[in-house]
Amino acid sequence: MASEDLANELAQVEEIALAAIASANTSQEVEDVRLNVLGQKGRLTAVLKSLGQLDAADRPRIGQIVNDIKKRIQGRLDERKEAVYLTALDAKLQSERIDVTLPGIAPRLGHIHPLTQITTEIIDVFYGMGFSVAEGPEVETDYYNFDALNTPANHPARDEQDTFYTNLGPNVLLRSQTSTVQIRVMENNKPPLRIISPGRVYRNEEVNARKYPLFHQLEGLLIDRDVTFGDLKGTLTEFIRLLFGKPLKTRFRPDFFPFTEPSAELDSECPFCNGAGCKTCGHRGWLELLGCGMVDPNVLKGVGIDAEEWSGFAFGMGIERLAMLKYDINDIRNFYTNDLRFLEQF
Ligand SMILES: [Zn+2]
Image (cartoon, rainbow, N blue to C red):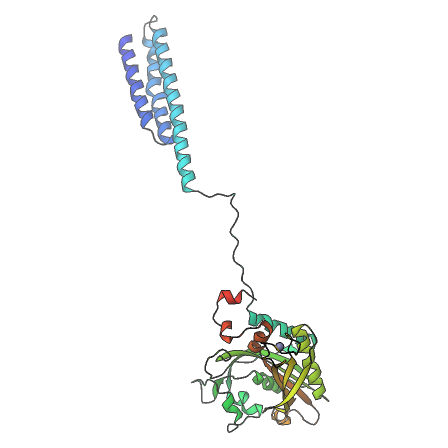
């Protein structure tokens, strides 16, 4: 082959190679161009191999041209490879934009509902006095809700606790008081007994700031030998001291409950004004806290406990009422509307 033809062919190879490099858009495309031109089977390599056929006089000149072309092509390949890499890196950084130096987003922490908080506080107080927690069903028969609690069908006290009846049977209802658990515990356990039973109760009542068809009670029952009204008073006075965090005067006013005799309403001195009178206590100086009394012997007889040998006291409190007093809340509906502005205050 004549040296001039070879020089032309080399110029062509270079032109095609440089165009291919310029249009390569990925590092793989750049590498393909390198193999096609400079690789073992590449076009420029083929030209180099054919140098042996040239006249000895032409070899150094053509050899010099080949080397120059090779250098230029290699230079362009390196540039293009770098440019393609930077473009790809830039695209990757744009698409995976996470700033790991930013502070994390803390998850919002909730806390225990105020009704659960006060229930737990009350349970703790009675645990400390040796009571244990007993639970019972919310769907009850009218036997446990009324009859066994000394409230037969014609008893007027039934009207005060109108509840919701189910279609599970003629006498199946939603319990209107946690006193049902007393009966179940006394049926299944022998005295001495010392239990409290917190839980949901239901009343068929119109909703207003003080009443809601669903609320929570906590019932207490103690059965032992020689239990006196003094034991009841001491137990509840200590409970009030621990609940409000300071000693408070108490007073018992006669009241009526079908299943206790005598029965009383327990008032405590208002912890907010120490008896002087304030908004919370309605300027009376006293708060009505709960109902209580000595267990009626008829109730004991009904569950087969010898009322000559055993006696006891019972008390029942509304959890919402105590929470409203303790936290100065004036509308019971706040507990159930799940408004975080309200709940976060406790
Ligand atoms: Zn007061």
